[in-house]
Length: 361
Image (cartoon, rainbow, N blue to C red; front, side):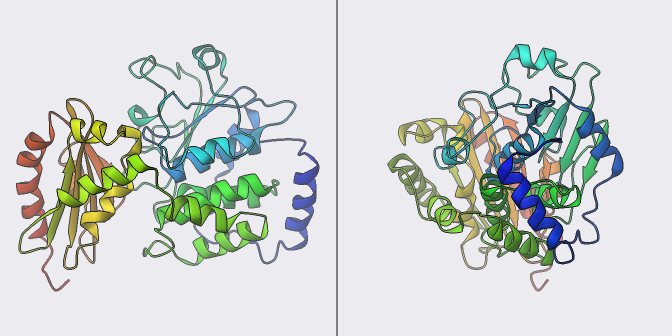
């Protein structure tokens, strides 16, 4: 992490030390010593998150890279062209952002920090490095909140009960008394807000609210984030939502809701695979739906499934049947082939999975 914070960082670090009794690290969010030691040892790290990065991935990746930066540590971020959705582009462009890593930066890196990523093949390293041994024996620090994390790092900090990886990063900075300026605060708040769907999920426990309050005090622009994340859409994103609404169907007496978008439908709306994520909330919002699935062919010939569970229904096991993973009630998987073929495989399995959870549970 950074050794010599800037002037703004020094001011906030003093604030943190003055209020340290209130800004404690709650039980279960303690940072393992080997994580801290490995981060402090890095001088030319590449910091990354998962493919199709959401706000939690972008916020934790950029936030950690900014916090690590110092005269003796020059982090780069792995963000291949076309990775970021239209809606989340402002998180990258909205303030200081570390340089994007090139192939040469990967080769020169003395370590890697993977955030919000459950499996090494899901790291967003770009097509050129996807099938390569990009770490090549150099250390990986793996920080994540997915319960299906494979512990692929040389050191791993995985907290399944955390609402988001941004929440974990916040407590890591507090524990190390690292400066949190307004830019970092906004990035981390965005991840917490979106991964809890506006603090409405069961994962939004006291540690999430405590972190959000402290980040607001540190300068997170809550109003701007709410406007951009919840109330702003481009015309193409709006047109894609029309498709998702039109294609929404139910099964299992309304307990299973699903929707889809083919590659042609996504392209015709003016969107790409990077723009697919929150649309799962359309079928998920149907009254009575206990399991929701979104089938999208963002990349031609590959269909991505987003799974969401409600009540007692968990979905990580269902995603696992198709090689995926994630959280207990929010998971994903990818199958080769188009949307129709994916639905033929997945929908019967989803109905069978629902039967494991009595409707009264």
